[in-house]
Image (cartoon, rainbow, N blue to C red; front, top):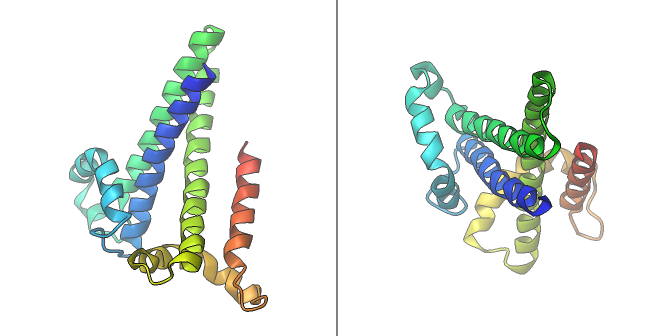
Length: 182
């Protein structure tokens, strides 16, 4: 059963994180024709496109990508429902209040975990590429995605021997956040 739950969490993590990344890329007006934009669209378009059609016109004119955010929330809720169904099939029937609390709790946990881990993955890719291949075409995109989170830290944390430690500090803070979620 642990293997099934692990696989379920992994699949939903990728879907929720992709929807959140799509919303963030659209918020920053990052061109989606480059990576990771094409990957994110391929992974989420089956849900985001229909949601955008049913959202009110006023929301579609907003700068916020409500379709992608709603997709992330719906995917998190779907994860919570599937997780609760699996849990109740193993442990037996529960009162409906407990099941609802379990669904909402697991949904919020999945949403927050996807946000924190997704940002951590972006930061790791950014850090590795900045050392290995700083002229890579994807560095511009990763820089635009990560800089809003790194900028406040860079104002506080000085360069140490010419090395920017803000990425490392943010990864440590995100890891602490993930530990608090667990």
